[in-house]
Image (cartoon, rainbow, N blue to C red; front, side):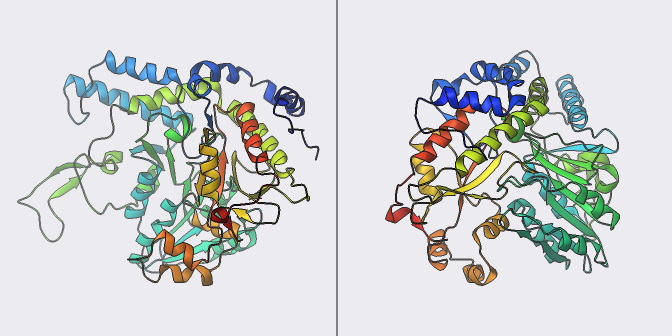
Length: 487
């Protein structure tokens, strides 16, 4: 693989010209660079390089203006009423639901339930799914903690919990074993959960697993939060029962709103463990009995939206979707894949004077079936791994936003860094008292996290280039005693 030269600080123009020659499709997306200069001017004005899109996307100035103008010229009230202000808000909420369904090609048999975030969507499924003794919860080891946490609901109701492993170094699923696990019989309800894209490594898991699972009688939960910001998800093509996502990860604003997109027939098997304001037709105190009488849940999706939805922010979802569509999700995908490919190739060719690699990438080394999220650690000339939080701190000093840690994905972290049960089980013997410092001692100061670099809708070549220049600062530089870890 040809390495683009990046050795001189003044070489950017030449490097970018080589980049455009190598990735001609990127040239057709250059209008986004113009949008970046206008709609996201604050980044350049502040000298800030943002590379944490998997943590949260960024919003355009026009999104804020459109939302503020709508609120300024409207009178909106709590939608749980029939007065004019409430009806006006109800109309906006319902139009936004329809807009979300249209965007994801989910107009046939799907509904949208607004939640505080993707985690809220996952919890709705977790607490209401009919887990039972003899049933099973199967999930991939590569999952966000909010998906991992569903196992506690399953276990308390007697269902078996089974993990499908991922394999280093690419951190992809063991396809043969997963096929066997999906084929195993169960004597109760079965839920299979997987991410469309890993929030840790960027691995994109084959969506064909959805159909394979359903053919074996599984209900399927797809965590799409890390996938949809830079990829098209067409629910007319793949048909999971439940999909979780957060809108701020797609277009930055608003926060505080996610969604559970669910098949109507799949919702019917969910049994909510409580009721609240907004979820009932009516209830009674006098008629309440130990048998659970005294309330009627509202038919349809309203029974899943606890309390009052974040109604003044919901219009911003429609605005954000229009903004993303004006750019084009396929354009975003083309740009981020070109940038990610260049970033991966360039980082992996950085060498110390002794020929050793400066950067260690975890997960796929190319952009085949992967997204714009790169997990890595910096390694010094003698093979000592820099502590990821130290690298993050050094990046912070250069106004470069990356993220360090395990990224709420312990399964991928453990597979990437080579942890096993024997090493980690002692860390959970005393849940009441263990601290992170104690955890570090138990693992004997081994590497516990990675640096995550992620690209998104407003990323430019300059952003990727500046991170490479930052990485070059570690060439021939020994890790400090405080930052040195073993792997």
